[in-house]
Length: 187
Image (cartoon, rainbow, N blue to C red; front, side):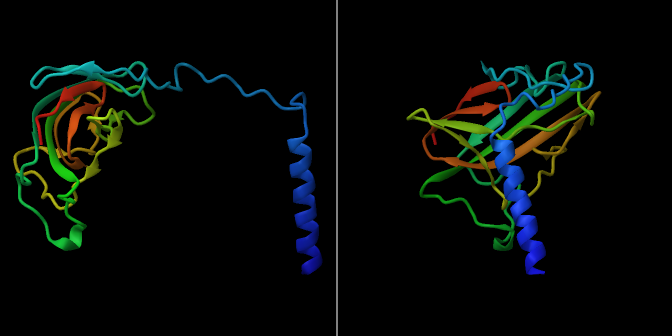
């Protein structure tokens, strides 16, 4: 058994050192992706956005997805109530505030293997210019007014309403939702 392990280890190290020492002339070329079946990420640009004004969002070239943010609140209680402690920790009120977002998403065209669009994790910008991912506020209850959860998929050819509850750093000044940037109310 020891001889088998030693032999296998020796062969692995030898193969690894040969691979590391090649000049690349013996490597195989990678085939070019087919533009029709391999979508590429869209450019990461953001635009100033406003409540009740639709803006285009896209994760891949060829997507035609629009978002309209209906409401943003910062620092309030969970609108639909809270769950018990067994659902995770509450927001650290010393350093975080609750962000709640209500939006409508219309996915006209989605150029992916699965024709569904899933919203990205919101990001915030603080007063010092640092970007931070928002954290899901697990203890906020699900919405009860025809809004689905933020990370539920929107199928191609449909419109959905989405609600998200997130913990963000106190003092955050801007919110990035997909390609739109919103100025946040003071927290």
